[in-house]
Image (cartoon, rainbow over all chains, first blue to last red; front, side, top):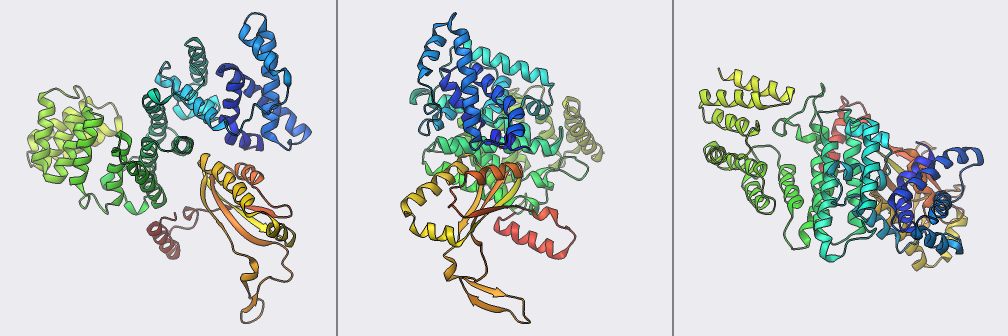
Length: 409
Length: 139
């Protein structure tokens, strides 16, 4: 990493944020001139030596480029004529305003995660503008071709301009919903990075860490939002299992088989602290906070058997109320089976089958097969596991299911 | 990601400047810097040390250790405190060090903190250390 890359990593969100405000909310232009400034620095810094104030250098260079653009566009768009005029006083004092820079970064997050964009576009734009990742890095992390990411980002910026999305932090009325949008983008980035089965695992852990970093930034900029802490807690507690979740050959190790001594206790401690912050608001936990609380039960338990399954059942019930989904219902059934025995769990799963929830998914027959196995109903269990294997798209998981089915004969 | 320690090293000159500085101003400058680290999500730990005159030095050059009261004669640069940051590279740690509200005349040293995973895992003492780190959350 060069010192320019280090400066960019630390400052990109603030540079692009300040420039977006400077350009009257033109994220596309702001990002372009920021990239041009970086390109210029790649040539100038090794030649002339690193400037004393690298951030000021980048900002000023980008600002000059922006003013050039204002002048060029002034003839056909009055907005740019006004911008070009307004800047005639020179100086960049108003560009880097310490009292506004935090809001600029926040506004940038909200714009990058705006609901007019497709989910993929939100993820790419957030990583690019807020996280400061290059298109190459994003492409590598998501295992998609570079031109795809480029196209996504270009289209996203055009969509934002066309929809005239204002560059601002949403007011209180829209805050909750829009914040939910930002959190879900950060969670998607984290989940993508925590998939142990695809791609270069080191690279993916970096992506997960990137999501944690951005969520921490969000928490520091927007204090008093319990769900932000809920998401930090969920990410930290999930990441605490990273060291224990893959075998030497790269295959995934299930929670029940993990060597819990290898869990990262520092991450658990940070996760529990964040969960404490989320609970301290006294408004009840949201979906991320509740999932974090479930993860905390696992983190505190020495083994699967010694886990507080009663509490996990209650937490899944609460989660089912605030964020109902068939997956949550199925997880609750599994927790009930652990707390009260397989028969109680099977009752819930059968109900799900009867009401056709999760149609076509291998998860339902796979859980059903497990519970039937535990009940000693081997014939039915084998049929269910084989059904699950037929429905399962993942080669590795299918092999596990078939092995379990074969073991029952 | 990697852990780096930013070690603050004071000299007589910087210590004298610090004595004359306004406490409020110093707290504000350090507070702002800490705030930046927190906002960037990189701060792991930070501590500052008490005045060196209250410390002692244990010297091992002789056959038995010799204890001397501080300050420490020939020593020109004294360890004053540290930050531990979780960053992507040494360059990023350096970039943060450049932003530290340091007192003129002082220095800071940047050193990577190796993780327990980098030591031979079959060594009994490394295994014991791992257990201690796991129990106290210092992995």
